[in-house]
Length: 183
Image 1 (cartoon, rainbow, N blue to C red):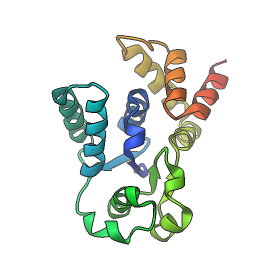
Image 2 (image 1 turned 90 degrees about the vertical axis):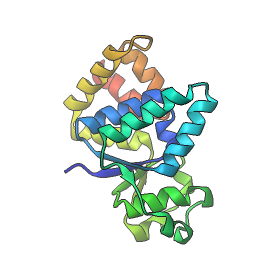
Image 3 (image 1 turned 120 degrees about the vertical axis):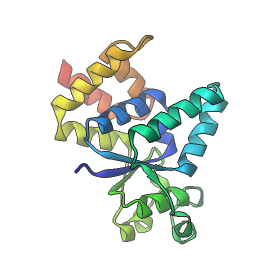
């Protein structure tokens, strides 16, 4: 069974990063988790960025349907006991209640070790997770990136273009490592 990984809103917001992470979850390199609060924040951010309500709702519904066990519920009673950054306590509470092995966020500093260690949750950047997945299954990751790029109707339609988007979206070390591997 793949490790359970709670995905913070900030790693679901950049479209290409979200797509890469979810495609890697689909090939069972990890099991994703999120909460209604994370989805509400994501929904709000996507709508503020100009996506329509209906399109956002379809995407979120499709994510929940694809990953039926991803939605963590019933964690709210833990929020106040979390000692990480106050605005992210709901994220850590969902990770703890959802029995996530890891929490992936661009805001690693908001989750200091003393706030997560008692709960046996590790905090990773998307770069760290993607590099770990590449180390674990390089062929699967490369095939997934090629399929992702080939599926795009607009740029980036190549792996090189996709890597540029991932670099800008929070995974620059991963993008560099894949470029080195492909060179």
